[in-house]
Length: 226
Image (cartoon, rainbow, N blue to C red; front, side, top):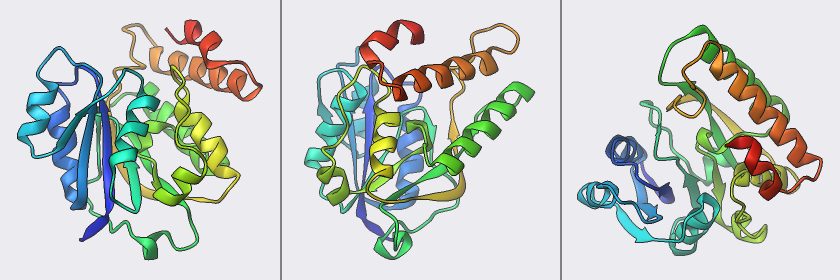
């Protein structure tokens, strides 16, 4: 399907193992452009991304900084922010003004790339949270109308939690559409090599997000995340 109104923005830092597959699935949407915003990779990330035909630009480190830089250069009317270790669904959708209709953007269902009871439980509750409270995380491939993105001032350039902050601010201006197609997300960030680590890591992340919503600065919370 034609999606020539959409710009896909991918922030990267040393993602040579993931970036090719990520971009190839991004091409399924047949977007207007794919912009890779690299924060100084020391591996082959930039070379691989260039070889796929994506536009590759440099940025300071920080996912919020990188995504804002990509958005500032994007020509599409809809911006889709895609993590480098996330794969878009095999089923292609048409992201257009008609698709969004009364929505300001949307996000996808989350599915991890590994199979375990712990990961399936984390998926279940993450998708329930995202749908019920309209609070998707960034690895759910959030897409936003560019005029709305600019209206709210883009991402805040926090050390992390920029996705939760964005979701909270978007709720104040409109609704996000849930797309029941799975993005395949790497489980590497919540697998720590011990039993039930995905569940414990997820509970930690929920606790951090709760503290952030209560008003605690991401800079203070960062030590809990590491």
